[in-house]
Amino acid sequence: MYLYLIPPLYILAYLLFFLILNWWLGHAFAGYREMKKWRRILFFIVYLFSASPVLGCFLPDSSAKFFLTAVGNIWLGYFLYVGLIAIPLSIIAGAAGLMRGERTRRSRITARLCLIIALAGALGVNLYGSIHARDVQVHEIEVTLDKKLRTEGGKDTLRAALIADLHMSVNSRPETIQRMVDLLNEQEPDLVFAAGDFLTSTYYGLKDPERYAEILRGIRSRYGSYAVYGNHDVEEPLLGGFPMTPISEAFRSEEIVSFIDSCGFRVISDEVEEIVGGTIVLVGREDGEKSGNGTEKRLEAEELMDGIDLTKPVLVLEHEPMDFENLSEAGADLVLSGHTHAGQIFPGNLITPFFNANNYGLKTLYNLQSVVTSGVGFYGPPLRVGTDSEIMMVTIHFA
Picture 1 (cartoon, rainbow, N blue to C red):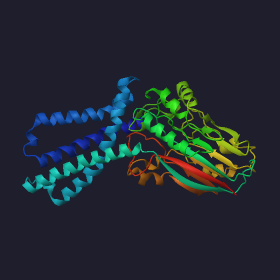
Picture 2 (spheres, helix red, strand yellow; picture 1 turned 90 degrees about the vertical axis):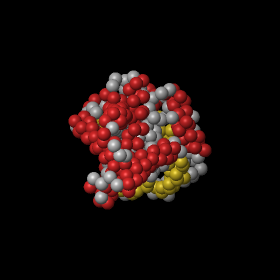
Picture 3 (cartoon, rainbow, N blue to C red; picture 1 turned 45 degrees about the horizontal axis):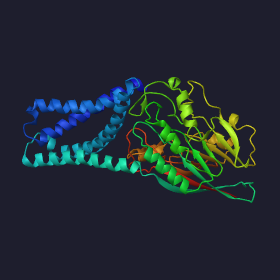
Picture 4 (cartoon, rainbow, N blue to C red; picture 1 turned 180 degrees about the vertical axis):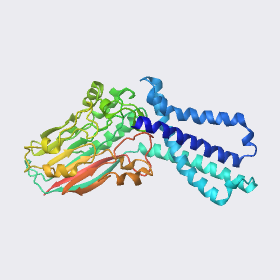
């Protein structure tokens, strides 16, 4: 569906962008409408940047493809904020009379001011968002479960680090992952959970994967590090963040599986394990959207958790925060997830709460506690605006 919907919408959006830009330039500078040569140059520059996400999507795997994808992601972020600033300014200017065709000195000054605000404002937001996206932070959250932890010595509290959505890809940097690992190790966690989306729908676009794997193998925890796959731990082409192939063609390649295994996590996919010396039941779920093997679906919660020891605390590690009612009925006590990015960039952080039962943080649903982290990396534009890149430290109290 996206293949027939997204490219036309993408083209229309850029045509609208170019028309608005021309309109502002026509009001800002006398004689601009007669400058055909400069208008063609401007159109070519806008077209060149606008085409980079498309070429990055549909070209075969190559260094050129991944370079264009990286440039396209940066351009998408800039284009987004130019539009968010320019469109309201255009409406205000139109209501104030600029669209009636006057070419007074005041109207030209106003138009130039609006151009500066839109272009420079978008640049400023992108610079801030790019820096902020790599500033990984540690956030704390506390959860109390109504079950005892039967460890030697009567320990009644565990510190678990929840990370997710590293999205290691064409725009990521090893230094960001290194900062995450250093901060995580400073917390001296008992457990580490990685809730999927190590990659962004391709392994081949990742520069120096062994360096990333070596950094992640440096994570230290008292009782081990566990992970599940996410919906982007598959191979598929993306345009503006939307997949251009059906789910049945999104496969988890051997390279992806091997790479994630090499990062030092115990990956549990539709499996149940007893951890912390057999005192806690950990359920690792396959992603509900993309299982990574075509049309095969994951196990239902009831089937996966059939026969587990419900006298022990039951933790569920699942990429997408969903299926809470079924998990609760199957006996889960706490679900740890990522996926939402908490919206990642404004205004996404205002929109995603309407599409997720738990968009971020701690929430109780169907008598089941859910913790969702905003994640470490970024999807599409390499920005964080209105959200943080984070390690979520979850202190679990056992009553």
